[in-house]
Length: 597
Image 1 (tube, rainbow, N blue to C red):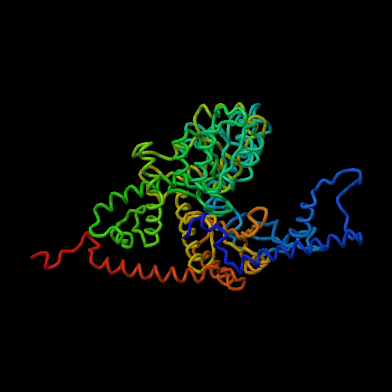
Image 2: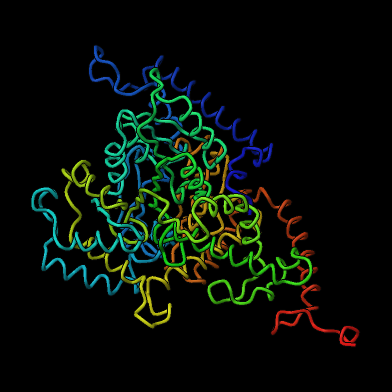
């Protein structure tokens, strides 16, 4: 599949769709403006001004966007549910008497497959979380519902201390600190880290909590284009050369802030290249793993675990290619030459394509990192601050910061999220610790004995099936092959309510996204996959989504994919012919009669 940077390029949008999208917004604005003008003249609308001597609380654009654009699709948002957020949910039917300016809940519900929750590992409900629920209920009897005071007073228990140490060990850091709110983890930690002589360099598509934390900080801020490593390096280099504004003094520190998985784009950050830049120029690295912790990596360790595993596989591939006879290019289309190297299973052609793409993509970066850090290194050791939340894969609340012992001791004293805020409830602490424990199999036991790792493997399987189907059927999807967040581009604003309503009528609950949460022309529907979904669930949903793609005309890449599939089939055929000359058992070229003579 194409890279995220390619998918975000407006050139991928077909010209007729691009023109129709802009024309639709133009007509909406014109019609809304005409309605406002006539409304003022005829006094059909009133503005929110309690007293004409006071300025309006809202700008004209805010009012216009809210009433003339947002209200056209308001029925797509804020749907309440009447069940646990598992694989299937009961969505409450709503009704309105004023065209959804206000609405109320009815007693009716409808059953829908849940693609809207961040229940990546399926621990929000069901059998996967049965053992964890028992521990949570037991904690209510021993510790109550809440700690009833801030951490600095008497709101810190041994349960919190155990979770912090468990979390630090899980992601290979010296220490960790937990917070009761994921958003506040970023928004209160970043101001404590960067002072007036520091610089924050942030990805342009970072989460709002990072943006709020940057604004709250007295430090300086710069932004680099999303996933553009050349622009990041240029921004860092210019910041070092120019120094601080006016005085041109040296920065006391430069902190690069990125996310592991970008929740609106589904992309995984280019951590190897970011680490190279940070190490080469002496910057600190802050990684937000809200969506990646638990959902990425062979051991659920997030983006660092994911790249550790990927780089180990690439190192093995380098060594293996040296032993492959014949042309090296043929090896990438011959799965039988690779043996069971993909975590105990023989790779298929898609695995080899992805590995080959990474082999080419990270060739220079791997060489540079091995030169700076040595042949054996872990990305966990190269990230200075690891942040994550417990509201997704862990089915709880809150967040954490992990790093050196000195860093965590400093944050315990300085960040408002730790000093003044209410600590995490004991039941939530027990839920999180139980999930982390489920990632570790008993000593000597196989991987399948660890419930958490089984869920990790299921999520990876569902992700690959879902992404491959959508791409092969001509939908424009965004993000990385391994990301469980799958945004699918809709473009035109009229397709947002159309797709949502058609999907919900078929029993599929999704999240549609429009401006200002994304760019004006890149409206999308976002599917969040879950390990709780069975293969039958995925197949059933894909069948209906395929139908919706025809109904709503969403298969923008159909012709391109057909050509690509034909080319891929030819390459596979050549690879199979090449594979006929090898012995699957020995993985060596057979000796012919002529050679034996």
